[in-house]
Amino acid sequence: MSWIDIGHIDDVPLRGARMVKTPVGCIAVFRTAPEEIFAASNSCPHKGGPLSEGIVHGQKVTCPLHNWVFDLNTGQAQGADEGQIDVYPVRLDGGRILLDGASVGLRRAS
Image 1 (cartoon, rainbow, N blue to C red):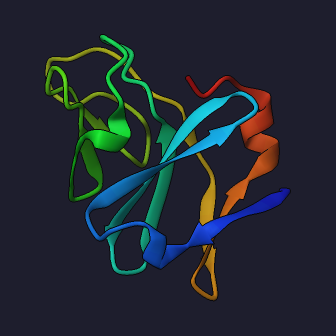
Image 2 (image 1 turned 45 degrees about the vertical axis):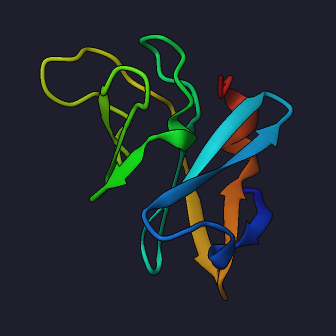
Image 3 (image 1 turned 135 degrees about the vertical axis):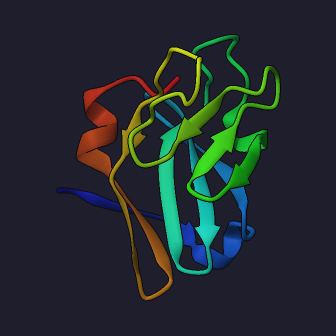
């Protein structure tokens, strides 16, 4: 994997998100716990809602437009909703957030 440093964990509020612009589109970086980070497409497949502005709860995010809930581990919509968002490998190293650049380059984020 080709890891890209995209910032410090403290740049993302606890149970919040930040958006990262990439050559293939925008990716949302979610902080679900003090030392837990996820990365996924920033765009909801339903109506294109900005997921980085959604509600982060547990390891899920709720779209701010129409309340679709996505599992940040798999990208799968929860409940009766059908849909999926892309998720990207991300890890922490000394408080720095590292996103897998090769994975981002393989698909369109939004």
